[in-house]
Image (cartoon, rainbow, N blue to C red; front, side):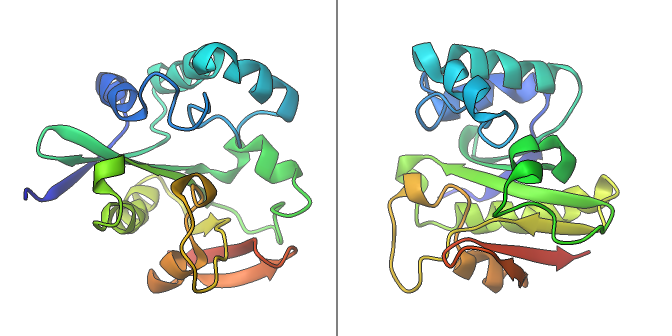
Length: 191
């Protein structure tokens, strides 16, 4: 088995994200736009396999932004993590559960993961999470923040843990800084 390599999503790597996400954009036409858009715009963008959401996310990438990291095994894209300045995630900023708990500057949010079915349980998400530290530091971030699911001791299907799990983030050194809903903590790692 070949080792993983991890690279920022750039315009040149867009076809690799499309290959990884497939025709429906990872989860039901999401195309990693759920936390970026309001409910009405997101739901509208999900129609038709998520065509509008795909186009919106592609514009972000084609505009020069690097909104996350892709993991590769050999030449094949096998995983994704979204990581960007917190202010880019309008739904996080407005959420009563995830809105900022303080006025710390330079916060980057680790907002979602997607791992190819055959790669799940093989450390891809943990490798991506570890890579966000160097990536965010290189962009000037002062800390990383995330909004994982607290699954307790149980496993959940991938579509329920797209934000990552509390256990995963704690293994990576994150600390819980708020918990406005029992199963939905806010975690942070200072850089």
